[in-house]
Image (tube, rainbow, N blue to C red; front, side, top):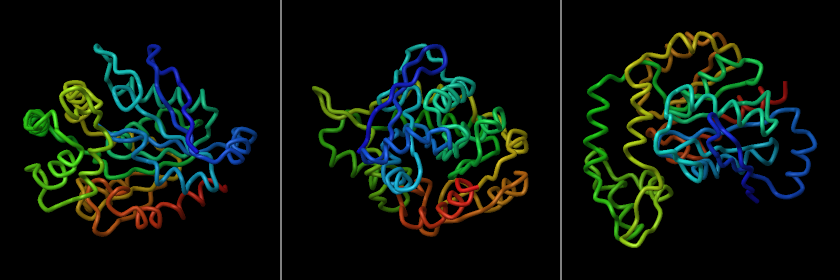
Length: 289
């Protein structure tokens, strides 16, 4: 069972959080909410439902909540934002407090991982553990932002069918080196049908504005400030290289490392069983302390 819980984010932005459990477990979770839980944060263009598989097995033993971040999923998408780093971190902090999840384990993918470690650095009292999934700490630069702007312009929207969505993002997209059905499914999840076909549920200009706030800077100093146990997970063929990921582990005061074979950037989508095997022992250790 999944239920929606409304959260008020920074500046009054309405956010949708999704709790995964069957009814008895929900009651148990509510009764023991003070023991903490897990907050899952998706990446840029993602949505809470991308965590469904992970949240379901987590909810067998822990309280698991996934957040639609501002501009994404069912959460509010204010035209003027803000879509700053502070806004995203403030939203995650508000979710932890309003959902009574703290001290929580934060699991973040890509941009959501950056939000997670920035929050862990800022509010160590709210975070007991951290999982960073395929997010770089180094600056990506202006050229990367230009590439993304051009990529967004190349999308053949609207798509006539969801099958077209899956095919383009899984096969035809110039950024796809070889067929990747998981990537096609990932993007099918963030499309909504309108009168003229299927379009993303997010505004691509807002996504670029969100990305603009972090691609030009490195984020090593914030990693150093993370005092809780932290696991850095990379896909073998993802965007986070092995050397950089291992340097992140070295910089983290209590860092650990895991690598998922035959996985790209969408680690938890590409190899869900291997992803679980990589993170579950860490989670169990942190949540049972």
